[in-house]
Length: 115
Length: 111
Image (cartoon, rainbow over all chains, first blue to last red; front, side, top):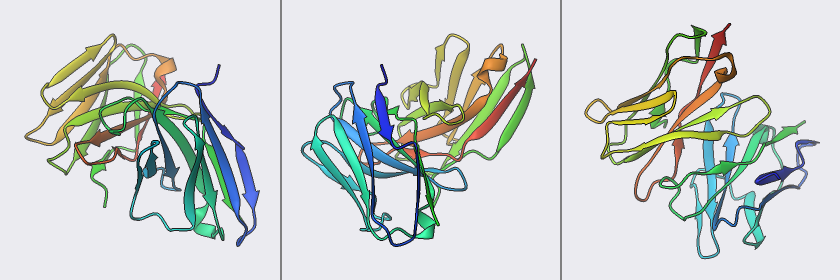
């Protein structure tokens, strides 16, 4: 049983397109996150979300938006894709809202390539 | 602005010896620190953590040391095994702060 799953694993698309990455967790956690790992391998948090609060990293362009149909899912929508959006995107979840005081469980990642 | 730094991009160690991975942080408000391990094509997995009220936490072969005055933490793996070969990420957070990751150190344990 995969605790945190993401689809697709690989995504290749053209500049200007709109795409979505799906994330599901079956851990019963209350909080989910999206991270971006850039070409320099740094993992940077993009969003932290539970059913009460969305916390956005202020460096994230507003072309990126999280959508949560229910507590177990947090999808990432990206509009007007740019070359610089190429990266590996990781979804994660944790039991409590505070990102640092509880272990986060990560999905396997989605490698996005924008041509 | 990187608040968590891992200055060694890679480390090579012989099987059975000790591996020491280092991490520095700049934000004195960080009070919770974690190490994650990542294999290729997989997401990071939690390894061990330490809160700022402690200076050492041990779990089997893994020990994390925290030096708050130096804003430095290290992960010791002893004895190192070939299966430990992976990228290790240090992460830090505090009240009101999201989790900040370092750039990772690739550990290679040679048989």
